[in-house]
Length: 317
Image 1 (cartoon, rainbow, N blue to C red):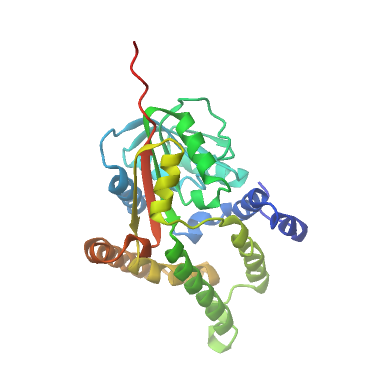
Image 2 (cartoon, rainbow, N blue to C red):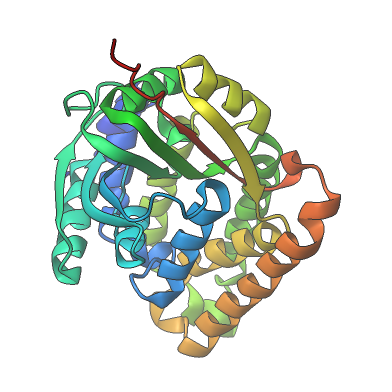
């Protein structure tokens, strides 16, 4: 892991999306769970299993073996394992720092997990290795998404399923970025003055955040139209492909909140604040599911989820 990229490395990464992904995610690995309010308790177990079941259903659970592509710190796989969706897991990521943290998280939770540093376009596992492949917020980082789908289908057993969630839609990414950029600018400027100065992170931390965040333009390669993503997976050979979307009102509030939390000292974020943010997200997510998803086009929502299967093995003679 290389958590402190030099200016020269960052400059080189602007011409190399895979290097950018390694540097950016190594930089974030140690604080990623805190930044995104990731936990391995009932809150995130419920979220992970809810997202999975919403797009893939509960049939086939528990899956005997599963691999997470672009696992980051293990959020999706480890919480699905705790929720009874998966028995044995493997984490993979292009970032050594992320694999290291994911394996450490798995060990703390007492889960049966192995891990490898891996390129999603060349997955280092044999054909027909897994019953399930999952990923959360990973496809938009991969240069050749269809090549990754082909690799996912290769390592799946016949009839095996994939589930990817947390991918940005084209429209959702536009408004989320604008909200995040405005919130960062507002927070870092307002906290320069008077009594709010105590809410300002040290300038060197803000500078490092800004330098690393500059790589987001390189590591966030794609946004997706749900229909295009379905066609991409089907074109790679998947069957039973289906995409769904979530979070509109929740994203409009969530992105400013998360950006604000990243811009201020962590000790300022009290338990009361975190509970407020969490319960607001719950209420707005419920509004999205019960009301807005029934009246708004799926393309307006921030997250797209997709599932599909590897074709069954042909019957013998």
